Structures are given as structure tokens and as C-alpha cells.
Length: 191
Ligand code: IMP
Ligand code: MG
Image 1 (spheres, helix red, strand yellow):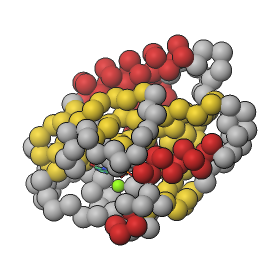
Image 2: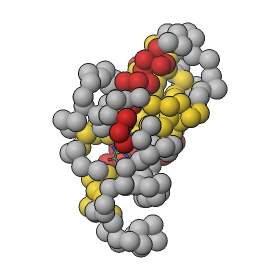
Image 3: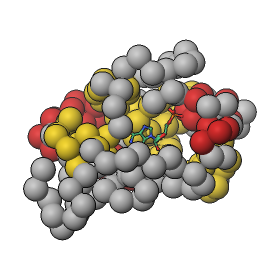
Image 4: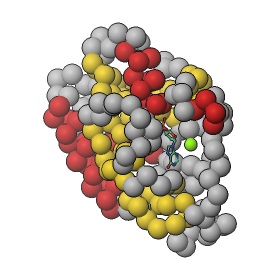
């Protein structure tokens, strides 16, 4: 890949989902959400940091008076990550009681982060709670998840770009790519 400005170390591999594919699919998701939520505009809850790009594009593809909020979670490190125990680093500003909440996630790998978040958010008394995940890694989920909207199912390799990072970098690549470097486990905040 030639993006020397963003990728001086040459660790960015082939395109997994292109800019055009992202744009088209996100438009379709926006249309589906616009139809499904007519008359009950959702509160979009993005999971930082990875979902920031997707949230920006998806929210503009939804033609309803949506509200937008973010939360940030972090794993307790690689050892405990498998348990799905996450720490809330930034909680929501909005009160969820009676709201139609749509969680906007960048990528579902094991699914443990999302499954924890769903339990956490249900406890706040929303009228409904659904998930819109841009990417789902095939065959990796270790828990049953009800994903209402899915952008793309992709092979279970590590990917970067369009919000997804490795060591906080490469989030600003406009498309989703494979990663050719050594994978550094995310410890602490950031997601
Ligand atoms: P899960 O709990 O295993 O489903 O992990 C979900 C979180 O891990 C996502 O929200 C991402 O922040 C991060 N993650 C999982 N797979 C990737 C990847 O391929 N690239 C970058 N981040 C990832
Ligand atoms: Mg991350």
C-alpha cells in the first residue's frame, strides 16, 4: 500500500473494505435504520475510540432527528480481556430510560466487549437496545450476540484503518486494511 504519510513503517497491507464499499454499505445501513426507527428516533451510542469514523458517516446517512453520545471502555489488559471484563472510562451523558438506543461499534471480534456493554446498557432501562456493527470477524464470536445491523463480515485477521488502530495509529486511513506488522495487544484505554 502506498500511504507513506500515514504509514511510514510500511505495515499496512491490502484493502479489506474499500472507501467505495464503505460508502455504499453505510448508505444502505442508514436507509434501513431510517425506515426502522421512523417515529422513534434513536440515541446513537458510539464506543470510542474505534467507532468515531463510522459514527460520523453513519449518523449522516440516517435521516431522523437522532441524538449522539459516546462512551469509552478499556479492557483490563490481555490476560483479562478474554473474560470480557471491561472498565468504563467515559460514561454516557444521556439518560437511557425509555430511549431507543442503538449502539454503534467498529468491530466485533470475540464479542465479549459488546456483550458486557449490552448488559450494562440494559440495566439503564432503555425502551429498546440494538447494535449496529460495521465489521464482524467470521467465526470468532465466543458468545451469542444479537446484531441487528452488520456492515461487513470479514476474515478473522487483524485489520486497521477507518477508525481501527494498532497502538493508537492508523485510525485515519480512509479504508480498512490488513495489518502486516507485529500485533501489539491493546492494554488500557483506547479500544
Ligand atoms: P472483542 O471484545 O473481542 O469483540 O473486541 C472488540 C474490540 O477490540 C473492538 O471494539 C476493537 O477496539 C478491538 N479490535 C478487535 N479486533 C480488532 C482489529 O482487527 N483491529 C483493531 N481493533 C480491533
Ligand atoms: Mg484498539
